[in-house]
Length: 456
Image (tube, rainbow, N blue to C red; front, side, top):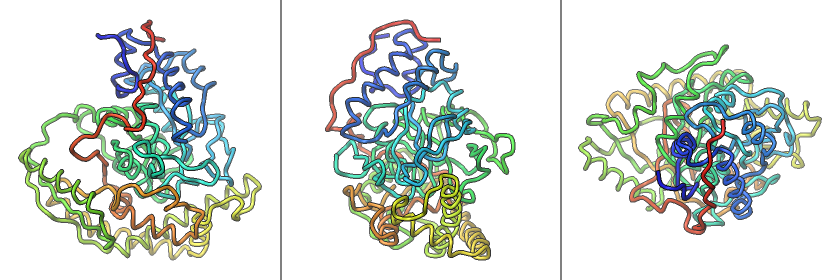
């Protein structure tokens, strides 16, 4: 194989192959990733904590012998726990919160062979479509500084798009994987409900609305990591049916002639930017040219009823979490610890009764039954990822009045959260034609590591 030229030009499986073939060591990959953080992160603010000691320990003992052996990785600073390492959710209320055990998903990430080198920025407690929290500051879009990288997995998406790591942890409660993937030109999969475990702290998060996976630069990395993480853990309340074959084997497999619906109309009635409409139209033309049956169509469902039920369920869970954290961290619930949008969510949750919650679940079931039959006719639905291109930082700043920010978020992301409700898989993919491999504002190559034997 040719001399290893540029760390950032490879996806995760590509880097692992170089390690196995002796072209580079996992130590050198991790060193290149830390160097990338040092040089790029001051412009991005994508990584808010580095984990040098953890990475050194993994390299000393040897990364697990999985498909991503020795590949640098970043974890979103939300939900999942690494034993002894704080998971603060970019929030003053929970800053420093630490568990003494790994989450089930982290255990599986580690078994894939990755080396986690740090934590990525997120909106406060994930409650925004833009990663610009008061505590840790805004993450910039690597394609154009000053624009949002999306949220809530904005730090992960910015780091992957900039080439710091080939993939990073993400989670998705209303589009929080797919929105930043759309903003940063990445692959972002919200997998089928119950596909990845949420334990041991949760059986399901937000009543099953939330799923966790990664953002990446290649479909094959997304599929291969799902092969590593999918399946139930002991105690899970339910799980998705196992696939017929490994997900990685589906990449490049002939899907046959698909029935594909396309729409650029938001069910909420929110306006959609012409650039987003053009991306859908171009994708439809490409799919038709590949021989698929493509037509304009969309599910007909009660978007207002769904939005109301979603807020009730989400707010009840979030208010409970905030109150529990306030007691555990001995901190107040006020604007010194929470942004205004989270104070608004707190009050929404406190204002709901158990009967309101049950009615929201009934409403969610009713709307899922409206959406489901659509996919008995169509195999795929293509929509924009967001209703507009990435807005400037500040437009979605969550310490502005809470309900105002919520309305802006809803208008920016009207296409994503329905699939958190139905539990169906949904994926953001970059539009055609392809853009350059890495952001235009950062063209410098990362250092070329020396050749050496791979680590254990």
